[in-house]
Image (tube, rainbow, N blue to C red; front, side):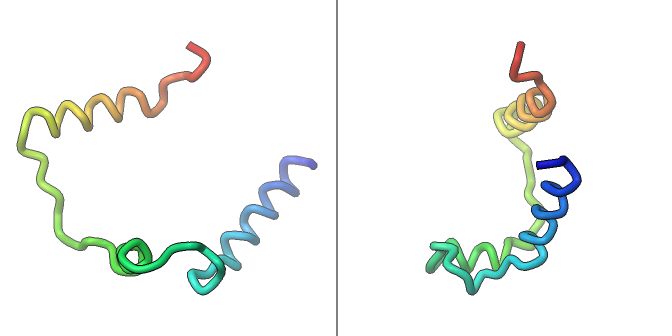
Length: 65
């Protein structure tokens, strides 16, 4: 399948997505998705900051390395 056709198919699936479909989400999971937290997350501890720094460093790390 050509790259542009695959991209268009992906876009169409996103546009047609609905939580009313057979997502398998129920209860709290569906509620959190529909009503995400609105408060600002505070990262004050050194472990919190380290976790974010590691995530940011590894986000673009090559899987082939």
